[in-house]
Image 1 (cartoon, one colour):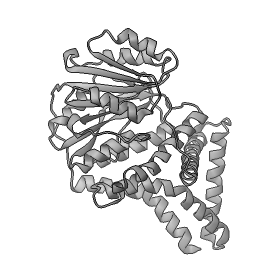
Image 2 (image 1 turned 120 degrees about the vertical axis):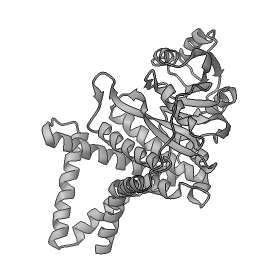
Image 3 (image 1 turned 135 degrees about the vertical axis):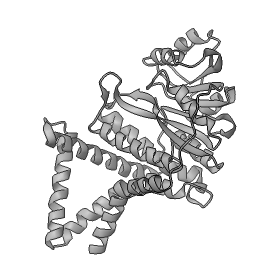
Length: 374
């Protein structure tokens, strides 16, 4: 049981601290900065929407108000079988020379919509975004600066969870996402990022190919294809899009299950990702796959702590139970404040993420598919 305890502890420690430490060391010993300079290539901004009547008007105003020359920007919006007033709203913008609208009568999924949108994209660079998030005015200009570097094929912007007026959230999912962005920053400083921020990322048009139908994580599949072609995937935290830090417990959990299920799906859609043909193999395993194994490692540590009688393992057991107790306090939304409140939020988020990983694994084993929804 000792080997089980320590093996599981090592896996968890490497996943959440060791990998970041290795990236930090790599970035300091062998930095790989991205060349940046002002430029204004012709850009196509593509967005796939389905039943987004509540957000679409605001998002279209956001896109049309971006600080980028109107004559150098095309906006392509594909409606994926929308049944609400989404198409009515899009018709109001169809007369704008900057906007190109495609309304598919049947819902075929986001991946098929992306393929349609990319086929209409005339820009040298394609920017991908979603309907929910608000892009800062200068974000597109900042993304384009990275493409001065001929080695860069894809650039990810930064997703900010919070409000532009009050700043980014510092607890719960907001805290988790700030840590995640730091890891992406270190990946970029030492080479390439594993995946991009779906709310805002850009790709050279010539590097784009069709996305397999039903793909959940286009923001991982596309960047990995870029890396496979020998180009870098960088992260620019100056180019930002804003989103709510809390979509509600049920929606947040469902979103995480879908995202983690997408990692399993990638292994089926692109088995080369786990081969030597993937230049980011070690990073993909460390950043994506090991997180899927963490909940099973946590269970192993708990079982081993119950079995082993030495004082060290008794202390470990008490700490685990206290941590999970704090997490339950947060998930039950019981009143909490101060340092204990912050610890409870962190524990609750940790438990939510790992429970979602278990559900994603169960879906994978059972063959249940996670569908794209708005």
